[in-house]
Image 1 (cartoon, protein in one colour):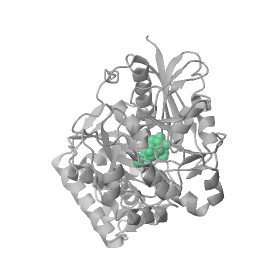
Image 2 (tube, protein in one colour):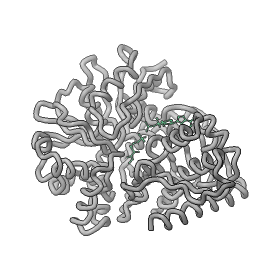
Image 3 (cartoon, helix red, strand yellow):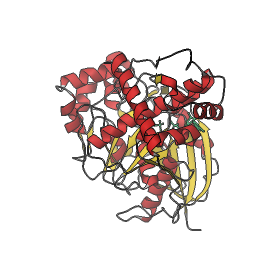
Image 4 (cartoon, helix red, strand yellow):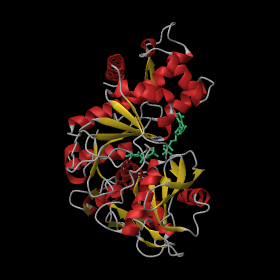
Length: 466
Ligand SMILES: Nc1ncnc2c1ncn2[C@@H]1O[C@H](COP(=O)(O)OP(=O)(O)O)[C@@H](O)[C@H]1O
Ligand SMILES: O=C(CO)[C@@H](O)[C@H](O)COP(=O)(O)O
């Protein structure tokens, strides 16, 4: 056994920690702790969760990296104290600020060209505008703005020195150009009204420092970027992550600049780009539907799989928490096409799984339109464990779906980055010794049914949200 490295996934619902062999990537132990269920959270809760999930980290780990939920606004004052609870990526209160900022620059395309993405309510830059407008006293006290992974990385270093970030997570702020490798402080000032301290952007294998115990702390990154590192995405591979958010992303050598805002032009954690489409409603559509039907997730799977494709004509637009793609922050969900025949637990369960997947299929189409090759989809995130998701996804996505071996990909990607920082060199260590997982290939009947389901979803969406 070579040295050990730790990877942290501080995502929306929980913190997961994995400890891996630095040479092979073999996972030797894991831990997990829940986060509060809210869209604004005291960052101290993440630190507490890291302490619980990482219990046992001490002593034998040579390096660590933190991957965090993207976009969250963590504000700190001159003493390094948190000014207010962090506003998370799924907090939509800054939707009005997003509209203002887009209008001020003359539309989405100038933003996409400046920083890769059109700022929607998720993006940090819109949260800063909201803070300046709605909480001027708090805004006054802000000395620095950090992302969740930046703040946790800084805490690991004891709050000493200047905070750091990486190109991947910085690309989700709305005030960093991954193409130029530079902050667009003019856009931050436009949003917030004044300058504010920003973390230094580290290179992919550049360490942030060492903990008081001498553990090397790598740059860290955003959670989707870390999943990309773990999945070792190659040309033609597209990841679909089904966590709190649903994300669809691939890795590309060239940046995208989608002025419609559907595809965000993020950077990855290796120096390339990570075009990504994101929905606000993924795994929790299934938990909420299961709860409504008085069953658990296994029960929901059984019900969904007992119904026919298309759920007897029932379509769920699952905008339960508003929606980001399409940009409908104030939307609510709709069940369309109810009849006496399909008003059954089985059809409702099926419509929930199909509706969630259709949002991601639309993201997949948008990625294709922006030149991302889609030869197969790799499933990750909590809801990728669902038997119904695995059965229905190949038809709805219209392509082969790979279910990689069970592991926490975000945390493993962070661990791989930690191993890279430890070893150095131009490329991360090769960890793909493990097998590729299960490949699910859609039959012609699955493809037909999936196309019908996606069309019904599009029709319902056009009708209800023209
Ligand atoms: N077998 C399953 N079927 C459906 N959903 C599942 C299953 N197992 C876990 N989940 C869901 O996955 C979600 C957690 O996934 P995760 O990727 O960790 O989310 P996040 O990164 O947003 O915190 C939870 O909502 C949980 O209910
Ligand atoms: O905002 C995005 C992507 O742009 C989200 O994907 C967040 O990064 C949160 O991820 P999960 O906690 O849902 O995995």
